[in-house]
Image (tube, rainbow, N blue to C red):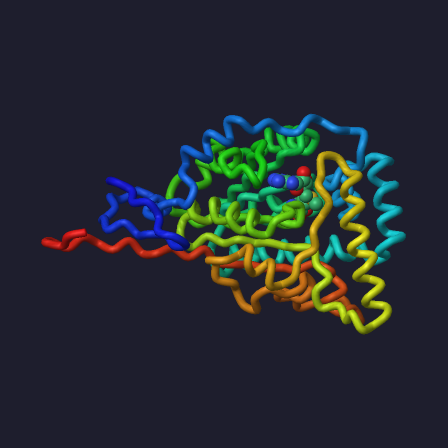
Length: 330
Ligand SMILES: C[S@@+](CC[C@H](N)C(=O)[O-])C[C@H]1O[C@@H](n2cnc3c(N)ncnc32)[C@H](O)[C@@H]1O
């Protein structure tokens, strides 16, 4: 079966009838070949262990009530909360959204396989707590940070339905070709890819769009993407309190420069997040603030824009393979 090169901007469906058991994920030609991704993955080296600086994963663990943080992480959190007092709530709103999105994937799309990229330290309210009660539940956590990955290795060792891989979102081959992820993608069963708190580490919107596409092209039809993104969208720049909050949120992004192996964070608008999700179909109500996405119990007296974080759930669409009819030529 010869694969055709992809035409600009769209995936081509091959005109073949697939034998039973062959994944339809193979029926689209990826914009970047597997070979190119594999070469890049072979050259990838995880960043060296850094315990001398605060870590975004431990910072989040602290704000979510976990016990994996060090004193230097908690110092960072104290300084950050002086800048943006509602920061603990911002993290909780984001985590609450993630759990609502997981329930959406399970109940509305019957998805029980999850690939969590930039897993962090998921010990406080982890994804797998929601997923494992289902008999088909499978979770793969992917992380480039050695400290985080070592923790993930330890606790996944006792959980046969949960695996951890070392990998970088920006080098898709490091994640897509890891054994545990291959197993997750082994047939046509849809997968939910979770990207919460990760896209803002990428400076260039086009890079984020192209990289995400490497993943979605290789996902089975019916898969989902769940994403969040830090923002100041929706704040009223004519209002002094909102303008000050937006400015302090910008400053907070820059302080990530002082955390282990992490670039500064980048805020994006709704339109920019939509660009990153190009080619996917947003689930209603589209991109919202985290606290507004299908939330039956929003915090009283708090505007959704104060979540300072956007949320999206999007369906991965695939062209249907067209059967060859007798006498048809290509
Ligand atoms: C702020 S934490 C978010 C953790 C988790 N996704 C959550 O929602 O709680 C960001 C995590 O992404 C990881 N990360 C940063 N850049 C990444 C990249 N290029 N690829 C994969 N993970 C990355 C960090 O090491 C960190 O563990």
